[in-house]
Length: 172
Image (cartoon, rainbow, N blue to C red):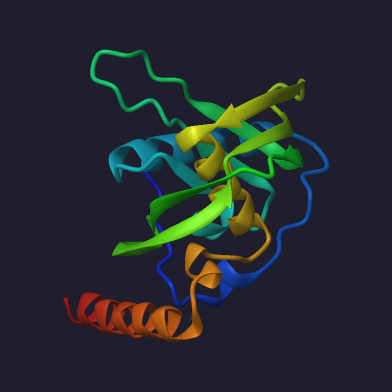
């Protein structure tokens, strides 16, 4: 089931999420809904706070090549355990900030630990788009948006555009 995505500014997007204590059927169902929502948007990642649920849960699938099999990942309590000194700059966007993009610099490679939907622990090294995406989504769990990595003036400009966007959306 597709879920509505919250748009910035929304106070729920700025809250830090507590760890998931137990992976229940409801949370597995939420993860399925989030994947459906992400693919429909379309996006490459989605964090639970973006659909109004304050749990440490993200979904991602950064496979973008035509004909390549999708690789959906469901991550409960994802945590970056190591990151490279080397940096990458990507033009990031966000489903909670439609049509807003900006260059963000982050570690080029990260080591991530998480629990899957069955509670099994995984560890994986990620680079390229996967590394950027997982860092972006984990930021959401800590109440951070990609615009929080920008200079204040640029951040304020995007926020003003989003306020206008939400006003126009409310008018229909």
